[in-house]
Image: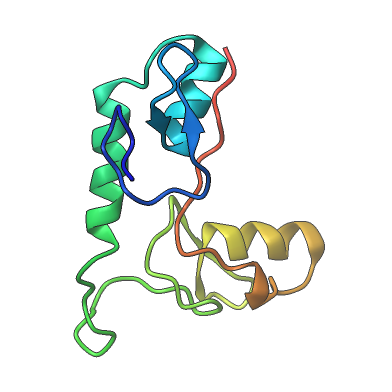
Length: 119
């Protein structure tokens, strides 16, 4: 089974195009439902780029860039410093500043989720 618009074969939920009943992936189906038009190619390409980034990763021993001293992530929108001066990711830094304690590791995500922009 594949999406009739973007041709992905894996999705959390399959939907149908109301005009022709062909299968749509969750992303294309929701976009069509909310905006009454098909998902643009730039968004499809951006999702495909994200999937490729999840592929081959640099081994921890070979990585020399910044790393969060708390959750050990290597990707963040902003690097911060903890009260002790240790380098932390945005999520750990903001959590500690707002709540006065370290961010639980159970809240760690593998992918940064940007906020949706409301217009």
